[in-house]
Length: 266
Image (tube, rainbow, N blue to C red; front, side, top):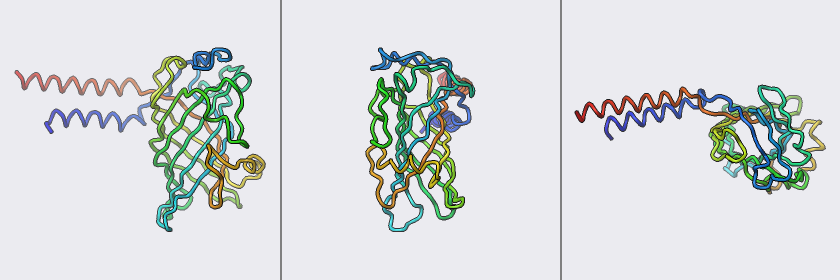
């Protein structure tokens, strides 16, 4: 590999590695009437930068590992959007959960190590935000969360969390880093969303969730069986774009490479 190629790869790697620190909140609008099925019920919501979710259902299913460390769980999550926010202030969306709904469905993989009790890391997964022109979601029936128009799809690229036992109740949190893979450019303006961050609170065996979770027999088609874990989770998704400085650094590096190349040719 030439020194020029190595330099280019180094610049690209530095840009990718710094993206989590450099990203800033996206601010824009969503015209849900432009969703494939939104013509009759959609509305424009603007400005906003964050989706806030209702309490959702999480199902964790352990992978057979013969007692090896770490313990690995495959997980699924489903919920719906309760409001849009801009800088912590509610954005007007009068038709949300009346004329249409926005739901989120996700899958993930997490690892728990005996060396750090109560702590876990997320090693992958995916999330999708859906628009549906019918408010038909049901936690009890496990329907209506992944049957609409996919507006945003993303890949979970990392995350961590904790769940601690407090008087027989599990209380904790998790944070996620998400790479946005697709955005419906007909709906979002500007369609520059490239990443997202989420923080969720987690509750296990909490009396306030007993009725809610007792009616959840499956999540996204995955049945709750012996040995599985059901939790309640609520949180948000902050939409993000790369900082302009990140592109400036990369362009400056590419310009330097061009100068070196011209000098060598000269």
